[in-house]
Length: 74
Image 1: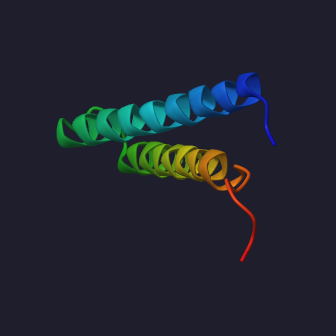
Image 2: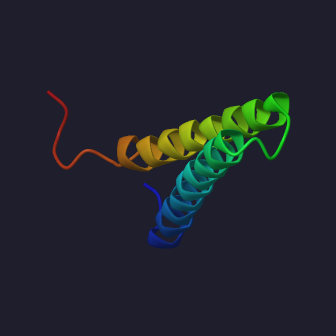
């Protein structure tokens, strides 16, 4: 079973990754709509943002999934 401190670190890492990913995708969309950067730069930024969002969701799922069962197995 994971200790409480490790679970907290994983949750914070997942939250940070999801928040940064969403912000990066939002900034890429805003920059793209104003034509402030080349399209390839905003596309790469959006892909990296989606990757961070996916990583955060994966870490959050592992925090939930790696818990010990509360009862005996069936």
